[in-house]
Length: 285
View 1 (cartoon, rainbow, N blue to C red):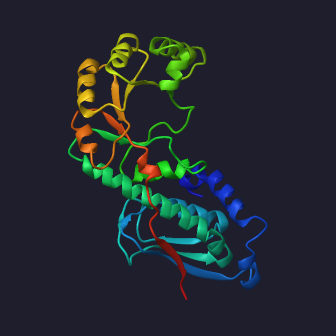
View 2: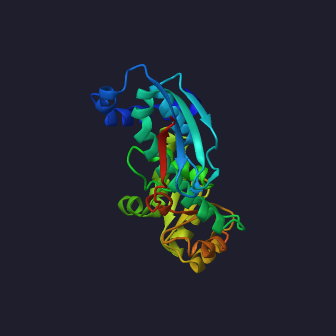
View 3: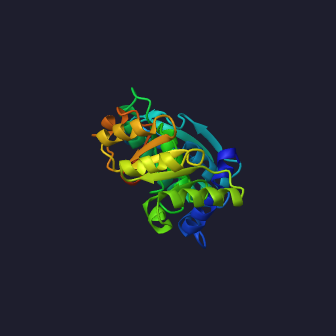
């Protein structure tokens, strides 16, 4: 199995077990075990293709000897009537993997297509687009890969790869200064080489992070700031920290945020507003 296949091994195995259970009785009842066949993936909706490597990994998991012939690659534009790949191997493997393969590719292609539309909106600016942790449980790996294919940047993957001090952390800790100091001490005590990001809810919060966060914090998240407030915050921050705008950002207003010069905008809608695109896997007779 290729590197991508190894990366998604646990996800694929769990998803196949969920779907197959005690056996694919539809296939077992009508198809001889050793029968071989060929299928083709038909594109039924325009968009950005994503999930090709995952699809190959699913089929290879079920039939290591599968012959997978790609006609496109992840990130390619796709049009109605085109074909993405052809696969030849054991019919049992092709049918067992069909629905998982389609679910993954349709969902990933929808996310990649929506992400690409956001990226296109601000292509003339230096601001980059980030995803969030607003993902489907146990499907985050594929959803974030789709965001990357669409041209955006992956934010932290989970709770373990960044210290992100958001409003509730700060309130429970007793304020910004206490939260930053404790987080920095925790990182040092446990030998963690992970960054600290702090959420600011006001210009006063921004000033406080600037006062106590130098050498500790790497990024300030400006939560629900208007573009005007972001510009004012950037004047306070200067080049001391990376900056991220978050909250209320959509396709209609993203350019106004990018025009402020903020380093990043994070958008949960890349994933939770994406609509799956239509694909189909058909037998070649």
